[in-house]
Amino acid sequence: MMATSTPRANAAFTVSNATADGSPWSITYHAHDYEQRVADYLDNMRRAASMTTSVGADLLVVLQPALVDRAHRTPVEDALLTVSLVPHASAEVLSRSYDQMRGGLTELAETGALHFLDASRIFDDERATTFTDMWHFTDFGHAILGRAIAAQVAPLLQRRRPPG
Image (tube, rainbow, N blue to C red; front, side, top):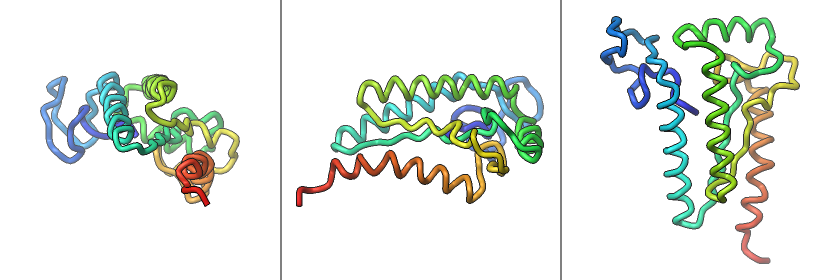
């Protein structure tokens, strides 16, 4: 997950920081440095892929579901999204960031560096409230995501299974 709740890219959540615009720091301050956050995230994924490849392991990266991109939100999810967006520039900038992460992860997967599961819109066919905030979901949502991840992990484990 891209660190979206921290004040700035590479900043600790609870640490008081100087703000980019000179405003007083608060726990809801956000520098809107989305491009840097995406770049840092993709760099971290490249590093993780390099480490796992160097030891002969597989890496599965899952782009988690995001409320901002859910096709059919419930009224509860609409309210959750409104509150969750308070520190952010807009829903559109978050969607654009997710698109950039999706693109970067797809490119890494195409090189064979990692395996990629785009689960960002996995709840789109669900009609029940699935999210509990912008990035977290109910047990029902975890079950859906868990099944999707298991389906991706099973063949990776099967390939590593010793003969006999």
